[in-house]
Length: 307
Length: 253
Image 1 (cartoon, rainbow over the protein chains, first blue to last red):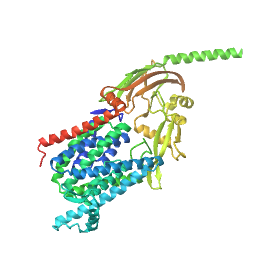
Image 2: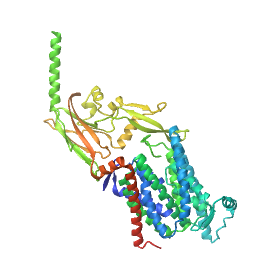
Image 3: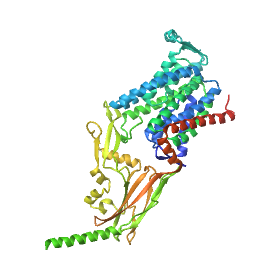
Image 4: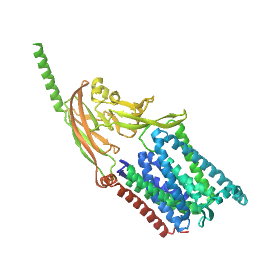
């Protein structure tokens, strides 16, 4: 029932770790998010050192997002063109973010920036999604027609006036290639600061700003997360020795199945129902983070690393 | 004449001490603890011989003592609890397991407890806690450290856990914590009578990674690129594998 982890140097319950993987994988398949924002705190709660929890997360997300993306690819839900532009942006943004964190770590301000960024970003994204989805669900119930995106007129004209105009066939939208690049850069920057894959930011922005259909958003987001996490896994293993292969194996046993179940479940749920569910989870994490920030911790000491 | 008397007394005291010291023995089983894939700590049997009527204390600490660097949290801007800096803990072992045949403060007098680092109060006397940078923050940082280590199961005091028989033989079954990292540990048996230390003996425990656990640990350290690529490939294969299973299982729409 227990397995010893060679890098974390601790023994863990096989079923408990796979169960954590299953829950996070379920969210990954359901919403197209990597789940790093949930996995790292859960692993720390069972005694995994923070740096190893964060490093190993990336490795198991590779498995979960491969599994989830494979299903979405078969369903025709991946916009590769969009995904590659997002990836280019996120690689660049991530590199800048890593440098910012390095500089702030030296001055001691990184921890504060990370926590505040989490609270602000998750709070904004969660609240917006919740209100928007709730109003969409109410309108659907009352039989009212969906309003046209008239309020986006100014934003659209700005986007269409940018160079490198491209049509994204799978998503059914047309705008400048600079838009997904800039979005990827912003998410990559925030992801590097916050230490997560960035799916929970990418998904709402693609839905609400770029007006891409929900099912394509999930598949494309998983595509971007997969490649980001491949890069992160290699860098963490090579430079920091913080990837525990056995821990990742236990997590991915649960997460790959969870991702499949999530993807199947996602097809049975309405897009607005999915959005409202994700917004509730994001808001719950925000509330937990706020409590973590303002309530005195049980112990004031911790090992270096993690958030 | 006075110096002769002093010499005789000193020799007698030394002989008595040597006699008591010689009586104390320590045997540890197992003395080598292999960390295998399914390792979750092991029971360690510690037994030996003391002089009849003596109390026994058994202390386990790492053979090498290093300083710790731990992050500390404090209030930033009067609202938020944040990691504000690093504290350095010196003269404290990374693992400290103490078991005794009775209450430690009764078995050994205060001066002897402090000299032998017996009990948390004695450890506190020797501990040196400083801030890595800047001024030392206010707070009982030793109490925080103790709580931190106890939660890790690496600091424990078990009073009354050592069973001493009428003939002076003793035994202790120690639940070796899986949290204790690989390395060599010193097992010290300290005997005492009427609050004074009368003898001591030592044994060692070696904790070592073996099999797959050792191979993976070695690879992650000696061949990092290969380890990273292997981790990625296994994850991708697992993801695709499960995707195929679900496809065959009728997961398509």
